[in-house]
Amino acid sequence: MGQLFSREGAVALRNSVREKMGRGNELTTSLLLHFNKLHSIAERHDDKDIETLLLRQKEYEISLIGKKPDYPKDLPKFTPSSADKCDRELLFKTLKVEKDDITYPFQERWTRNSSAVHAAVQRDLLYAEKLLENPAFTVERVVSDNPLLNGLPAWEKNIQTYKIIEHNGVKFVVYGMMDGILRYKDGTRIGFEFKTKTNSISQLSPRQLKDAGESHKRQCVAYSILFGIDEFIILYESVAKDKWNANELAKEDLRAFYVKVTEEQRQKLLDKWARVAECYETGELIDGDNTKCLFCPFKTECAKHTGGIRQ
Ligand code: SF4
Image 1 (cartoon, protein in one colour):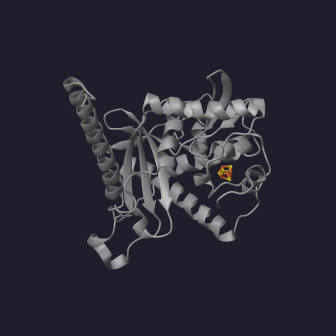
Image 2 (cartoon, helix red, strand yellow):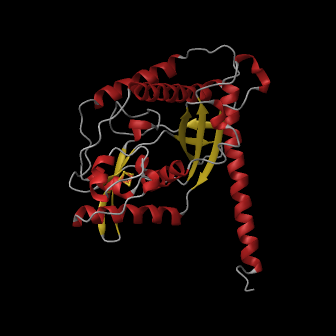
Image 3 (cartoon, rainbow, N blue to C red):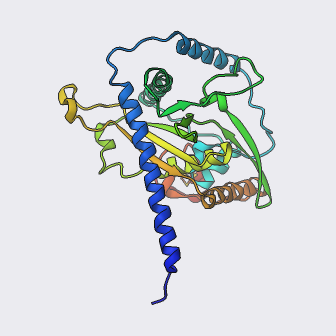
């Protein structure tokens, strides 16, 4: 049997895997500890500086109401949150095909609850900076000529941006924002992605959640293209908790995963976007992926072309 790797190659590969695991372990453990330390402080102190910053954040958000994004509208546009979607769904979205209009009120409340937890976590990150001794993470601040934006935390709409990309001979826009850019105590920039699980605490058990979701990892690849960061922590919180009196035996409600984005992953995603952008230009219908239909809002349109899809 032929050798797949030289001895040196195998050693280098093993070392790189070990290095990645070591770094990932360090970062994820530090972030979990960061939150656990904060949430162990029995008495929360409202802080004037932080609350003023959050007020300024609101002021900036209000200033954006009614403003249209300024990316070029004649190019196909892709966003990080749709990085793992089916190519055909991306094409329909780019072509502004009519969506199926089926949402249920409970789904709206589901989204609303998750957004509220997101806001609470952002607030926690700011309080952790202030209340913890030698905090492992701080939130990067935005530097901008816009006085409303300057000095705000580097997250969400404060860092919303776009990039025009030419790849495989086609041009497209990548547009989006992310949950946050953190600074680790060693000075490195770490992308922070926060996800909630809402059905049950067991969704976070090591048996059910072995690793970060593939679509969430792909989202990090897109952030890496847009923001030039290659290390990420995806933090999952279960909104449902264990019984109050489970105390120190309570099931884990926070899990963190490390993602290191590679150049190969970036190229793969750029290839995918370029394929869709090409079909946008030529009018060709791209293949669908029937494993990704659950949240697709174009099922009716898609069925016209395929004669039926799996729900
Ligand atoms: S219905 Fe499924 S196959 Fe069709 S576009 Fe949507 S995700 Fe793709």
